[in-house]
Image: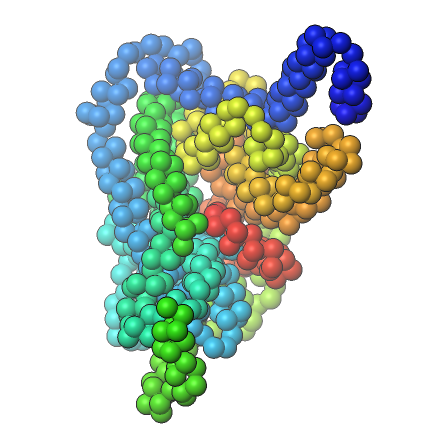
Length: 336
Length: 295
């Protein structure tokens, strides 16, 4: 169609076609812009309503007192003063979140890598092993957490029963402030299958000739791991650490369910009015749990907004660092 | 240079490794397999104990016995009598199907615009999508809750479903990655044949990206099946709208239900996902590896 138009234009005088062509081009550009806008429209609307607006509104709410019943009432910086000064729960919640990131993420990566290395070297049953290690990752988080609270039940749970047969007095697990977070880390390691699958694919992708030439140069097994495998799969490792940190910042479901079930188990009455968040003794009170408590137990929307603004600032900083650096990793992966 | 390479590698190809090297490799293989089997047993352990407990009587579940005697299969039926598991399943299916449908319909065009149409600001917009993807859901949850409360929709499934119909950052990201892999020649061929951009999307791109679309749908189904935080916020005070994860988390406290029934319910909730995995194993593994994200 455009070809015939060009031919017609060519047959006409010298001035007219230029104008005509330019107009056609402009029309095409507008059509294209309209097309892009139409394609993008779901995201533009969705992003404005479910992302842009909430961020602006929660920034406003963070300067107010708001209980959902009466209108928001401006109180200036009072929420932030309380957050950084008075609130005794903020710092422990931040520490708990940092703990789960600093301890949980490296352990997950280590286990995922170790298992992937072992599976990659298996001569037989690679498919079976891969399935076995992946299955726990498929268990819905609530179901997996329930299972673990039962397994690690201090008095009669299978784990402590087994430990007793070995002559070991098992810890109180989810019932003890010192062991609650390590128990959650165990649960995380059990569900490490996703990361393991990614590592396994990356390890199997390492070109075989690199190992051969390293061997020729006299590199032992450990040196091959250190100088061949690790550098080549390092982008995948970094990627999994990044995902781990992002998930750590929003760690909620397992902590909520474990505390809820374990506290219900401790108080046989199962009293719902008892504050079960962070049980035992606030040891599983992670930052998102704290935010939930203020927003949806106390309906302190203003203060919860202040908490969410701080979370936004921290995660935005983390995200920016990741995106800026990710170019280097992606390039690295392409070059390797 | 090539001469030295062949000189160096030639003996290695011809020579069989000496006996001691072979023996060491064999022993390493045995050690590796033993360690693998022990670790695999530890990973399967929780499933085994959950299953065993699900088959016990309540008294046994509270004792230190690890083996059920007698096996009480009735537990799996009792779960349905003691809790509205069907209702929760129905709610989850409504949430899952409507959200997945909306997410595909709204995210495919956006991903196409970000992957295959050239326009100014495209990279900046993609960056914004990535940032939105990485931020915790908790940062926007307070104003959204206020919004849904004002619309009198707290206590229904709508706050969970509606956002999916307006583009989902994770799906947009995934679909874009898949659309990028379609060779430009296919699109050019379609253009030469006189296809408009919209018809190219429908006829060429969608057909070629079918595995990607299947993976996105699969992830969405899994996500909605597992989702806990948002259903907790919006449906906790309205038990007739509970999804499976909310119902399961409340299962024990509901009627003072015992551990054996709780484990039976846990197993029943795990079963569909594991069944789905065995039916669509390739899609799962490929999806996880290709995207490298999401649990």
